[in-house]
Structure formats: C-alpha cells, structure tokens
Length: 100
Image (tube, rainbow, N blue to C red):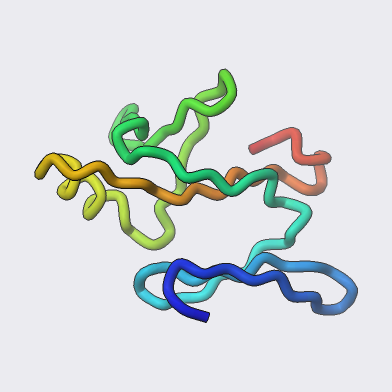
C-alpha cells in the first residue's frame, strides 16, 4: 500500500479501513465508524483556540491531525497553492454514528 492509499480488510468478522499517511504509518479504523471520506480545500479548515475545525453539513467538527500534515498544508496555502486535504468523517459506532 502506497502513501495516501486505503484498503478494507476483515479480521475476526469485523471490517477495517486501513490507511497510510505521508509518513507511511498505517492506521486501522473499524469500517462501521467511517461515515464518509472527503477531500476538502485546506483553506476551509478553520482554527478555534488553536484547534483545527471543519464546517461539515451544518456542524463544526474538530479535526485530529494524526499525521501532523496541517502545518505543511498551511505553509503550502500561504505560498498561494491550492491544497486538498483528505478527511475521514467518523462517528462513534456504539452510538450508531451519532457522535462524530
């Protein structure tokens, strides 16, 4: 699997989304937690109290930058480049996806 790629695998009867970030670190999430995979312009990511947030379908969602890519995207944006960020919108599977 190359950087930025994702795959679905099953283990113990549960399906997982496995993805790799730019640092080639792999992460697995239970597939039933993943609501959507979105590509958003980095400029649409807002900051509140130093925390990255995204306006999504009328909600303000906090972002977790597990790959520490937001500082690089911000630097590219400041140089005038249009940059897309891939965002996983996840819900809490135990709550039927209601809490994101």
